[in-house]
Length: 106
Image (cartoon, rainbow, N blue to C red; front, side, top):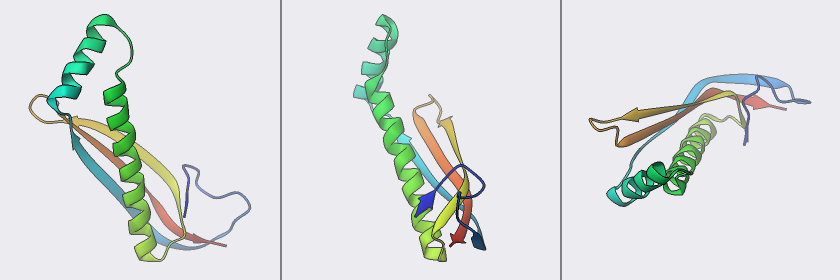
């Protein structure tokens, strides 16, 4: 499955459009990661625990989008957009969504 942010795949021709396809992940941040991030924030520097969670959530959203496109019969997704939101009363949830157009290319 080719997944790209561009509206087409260089050297390939889109022969069929299946429609919009999405993948979403909502991830909670646990107390230990929150504590570690707070320490990083206090002393400065990057928060590896938050970065790892963000990478995992993004990869899962892209993979879910790919599975849904595959189920439609597509072999590529073009025009992919990633979106990140913070949710919850204390901003303790992270939502990552991936969306694009499922297509068949040759």
